[in-house]
Image (tube, rainbow, N blue to C red; front, side, top):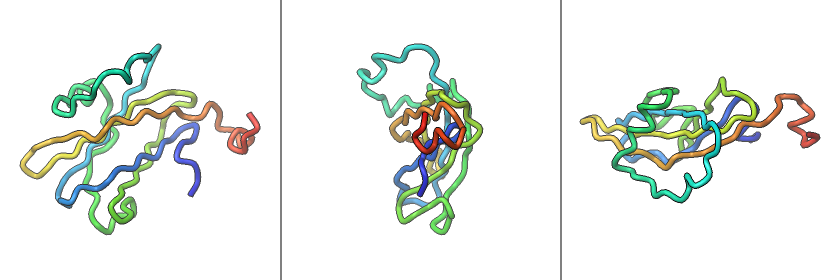
Length: 124
């Protein structure tokens, strides 16, 4: 498998819920300026919709057992159309059929600076 991060995409992976009827919504938010100290705060999993409200929804869907994005109990989804050399915060919210929602841990990722082939080979 190739790199999980390129200049314009990031591949996210998370453990699938046991219930196949759940819906996964992926949100992204571009990080601007300094974000030092962000890691010192404890994440509040009960109040995770705040990031979702301030960020852009990438997709909302179910991943059935035979989905091409699902490998055993792991779901992998490529997020495209990102900007080079940019840091993003991604969040996956899982919603059960009756509407209960829980967030996975946020994932921080920075896209590669350049899309040139020489950059991919480590010749920056």
